Image (tube, rainbow, N blue to C red; front, side, top):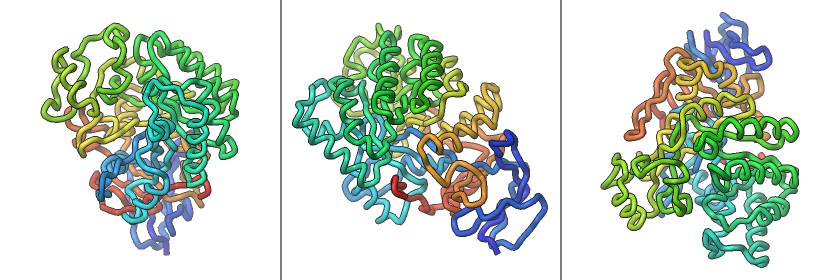
Length: 456
């Protein structure tokens, strides 16, 4: 008798390039068997997936994990991940690491798990800040050595790699970044990089990241290309460069998210320069997310007041064009990530809650920018291979039972810029290691997700 039998559904067979009917048997957190349509062995639970797609769970290559404050062990972003079909997510991006690996693992263990599996990167910016360095400071040699030692400790503790946020800490030189990666190269790290600068410096930022991969022989991921090349109409030349470079060096890659607006702290270095002239915009492109101004667009006076008084709050900036976003999502070289984060429970960019349903609804079904099989491959098999993540990303015997069952005719994102709590549509069931985390669009409260170490 199996634990679960999923009947009458179709799963993506990426080798065949098609959705294939099968009965899917689950046992002990794994996919035990793919059975011919109509075969009905005994199971403790039978799930009717008629008319639905049974996909590998979505893998979010770029998000920002919980910042557990004090004694709080509440999951915010991980719950939103589960609600959109994500079963494994990669945090610690943009150089920002909210907790040490040891502390994060301790909290997950105390909670008994998480709504989704977690992979974490060691944030170089955070380690720099812990050494007392400012955004624009150069790091003395002795400080660099201490940071490199801490990086090695974090990777030994289970970090999947490391991340840099060059735009947020312009003092990180290319040479400092290269030496940091070389210091932990023996761990075969996955290196995620938030670019140095956009607009007229877009191409030089891409070239810097490509050089890092070539010099170190490490996987380098260009984070959220939409944020870098979605401004100033830089996407065509950016994609042309990446296509050529990835063809010659497959260790380089990129991810992107499906919104023409980014989200960041209003007090960060992003806004230190004359951003209005650079992007060709005015103050009203900025949407405030936090009380007492939540939902308001900025004026010059309001922008300066909020940046001065509460520089830590996040804002949304509508600075990109939709055609660039569509092109980056559809390009064969690219993968997908939400760049999702949550601040204050329900305040944030809708990408934290709706990225994957939005791709399948808007860009696949409605706009036909890419096919369903292409999108699912990016979200699952290719993402797992990019990370070197075994046991995930495909529906096949022996693989982890991380699955999402959805209706391809109705799946859509619900989250809006003024309310990210609006539910997604068309997702019936989300399983992590065979345990349901979401049923009929509602969280079950189950916490089967775990911390995934490189040694797992």
